[in-house]
Every structure is written in structure tokens, then in C-alpha cells.
Length: 298
Image 1 (cartoon, rainbow, N blue to C red):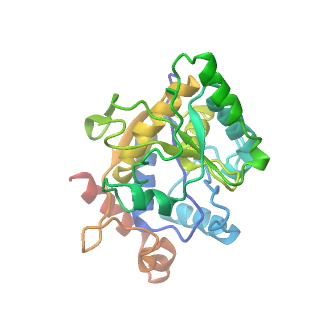
Image 2 (image 1 turned 90 degrees about the horizontal axis):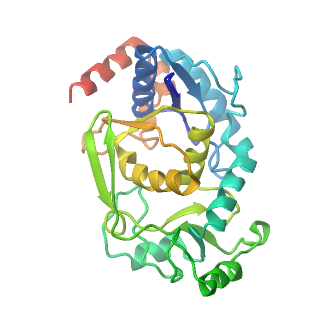
């Protein structure tokens, strides 16, 4: 890839808030500076929380804020569909590749089970380190013995009948994973210490975020992912998925977050700071965009 391709990927689980809008604005700035393309992708995998009215609202609010995109669900493009729930076949093919390579295994543990068993602290919105309750004994991605292959075959459940289990990616314990962030510089993490085995397919037969974002960014030829610093640890997980799937990872730019008075990141729980509410209060988009310049100086 020689041409810059960036993306913004909101989830319609509520009205778009100022924190995400600032990150999206940063993504647009970087795409424009590079003379590249900006893609809008709607990440609506969470069918219990995503609603059509929020999808309509976020497109309206993004345009009001001043964002423009070259490809997306409203204006099409060469890598359609740009709505994640319509990309299930691509996600399923990636699952099959991971399963055939021995990179993933079925897991019946709930998040509550993992939190109760995990001794390592974790961020509010991040996965706790998995204690390995359901983890088989073979090494993911390594050459498997005949006995190991029998284990894989024994756990090869039809997806439509696997409602009692998640599927987890088995990380290479102790491996140090590194990448250069376009904003933060060199970043590194140790698998098994800083993050653990993570879910790639959920028990409700839907792909998880870590898998969908890798598959869709690769398919849409995204050259740089701009997102918030709160997703930094997820990047290490996703780099492992890129490697397992034989895909070339993009560059990454983790932008600073807007924080509330207590130092926590602004999120959809701050309903009064949604773009829709701020707009109704008479605040102009250029006033809000000025915050992006302030956060850049951090």
C-alpha cells in the first residue's frame, strides 16, 4: 500500500460523545495531511446494545461536527459493506483459519468467572487476564504432534451448535511484542503478563471486537489506525491476530483522551457531553474542535 487509508469506526450503542469525536477528528486530520482516503465503518456487532436510531444519529452528528469521509455505508466504495454486522462471512473465514491453525480453543468461562479467578488488575474496559481454566496443553501456532491434532479435532465444534462456549486465542506466553506508535513512540508488552488469552468468537455465535477489527481493517486496506490511548493494550492482541492470519498490520496512532474532572476518560456514560446534547445547547462545532488542538499539546 502506497496511499494513506485511514478510518473512523463508531459503534451505535448510544449518542456519539465528544471524546470519540475528537479522536475521529484527529483521524481526519491525518488522512488529509497525507492526501489520503478516510473510511467510515459502522461497528454494530453488539446487537444487544446497537440500535438503528443511534446509527442514523451518529452519521448526522459526525457531519455536523465537520467530518467527511470518502467511503462508507452512505456513499459506498470498493470494500463494501461498511457495516460490520454485514461482514459475517469474512469474520467466519478468519475464525476457520485460526481454528485450523490451532490458535484458538473453546472456553465456557464467563467474564464473571474470569474476573473472580484473575489476580492481575485490569482497566475498567479491558479484559482481565485469563487464568487458563479451559486452555488445552498444546502450543498455538506451533508444530503439533498427532496427539495434539486429536485434541484439536475433538474440540472442533460446529459454530451453530457452540452456543455454550466462547473461542479464545491462545497467546504465546512470555513473548515480548513490540510496535512503534506514531504518537507514543516504541511500545512493548509481554504476553501472559500484560494481557492474556482473549475472546475472538462469542458464545452467542458472533465475532468479538479483536477479530472483527483486524479482519475489516485488513480487508479495507487501512494503512493507519487512529484511536484512543485506552485501546493501546488491544493493539498487542491484534498484532498476534495479524500474524496468525498472515496479514500485514497497519501503522497505529494512539491519540490522547479527553478526561473528566476525576481523570477518567469521557465515555457514553457522560450523556451531557454527547454531540447531540451539546448541539442542542447551541455550542458550535468549531468551539468543540478547538479542544482537539488543546489535547494535541499534551
